[in-house]
Image 1 (cartoon, helix red, strand yellow):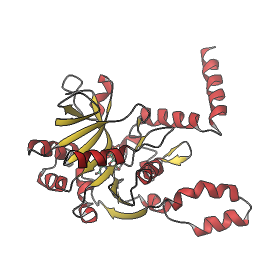
Image 2 (cartoon, rainbow, N blue to C red; image 1 turned 135 degrees about the horizontal axis):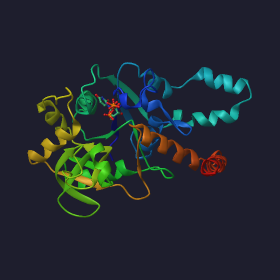
Image 3 (cartoon, rainbow, N blue to C red; image 1 turned 45 degrees about the vertical axis):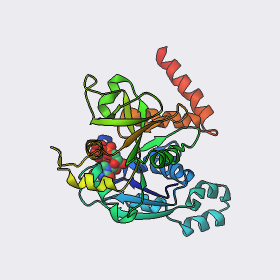
Image 4 (cartoon, protein in one colour; image 1 turned 180 degrees about the vertical axis):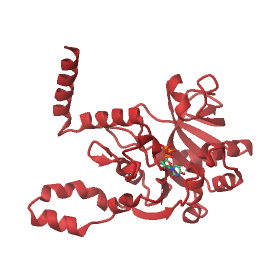
Length: 295
Ligand code: UTP
């Protein structure tokens, strides 16, 4: 089992302005929790023991969120609000947090390269800090991908999800060599037009890599936006004869992308409706609002 994970959270989140002007997009709430807390809980559930956040300017709130706050605990106890202490249970996950910074936002590939001293020579997981996997059940996709990496002696395993043709242009898309839930990948294309997409399988923001990915990232030149992409680096793995595997998410673990407003709004509502305490009332209120609109 892979013990190390890298969570890049240094991006500027410009598609979610103005909400992200002075707060990290990864700290935007989805129902009761910030997005990045779902990511960390998922990784801890997959056996990850150390998480390196690749952060940037203005991202201190992430560091504060995962730190213990003895003053807050003391205040909750002293004011008889012990029931709220349960809301901070995530502070006691069996996970160690480390932080490094990407000074200039040169793309996801460059952010991953910042993690090289942390992972040293061992395989590692990458989980994007702005994507949640699974609603009711905590996803174990990263643990399953780690097994696939070992079993197939692959250099990378990428989690993917079937997506509608219109949506493929928002994501990286893989070209599978065979059918099935686990398959070899021969090529990848970043944000293709629906006509150029090699399949409908889009990359969902969970990866497992051997350290050879760093060599590929280093070889890449920045694109026209001056960014170094991760999809390009994985593509180079394929081109240089390394084995790259794909793994489909199961139907019970849908992917929620928080990078744009339509998707963020829908995700918030879906998670809020699933909240055991507040969901039922919200469902009634929404039904009332929709009925009133129709009148
Ligand atoms: P995105 O490309 O969706 O994030 O990266 P972004 O650049 O913040 O978004 P926009 O386009 O400006 O709205 C996916 C993940 O990779 C991280 C982001 O923080 C996000 O969690 N990322 C992206 C970095 O850490 N560094 C980068 O240079 C780019």
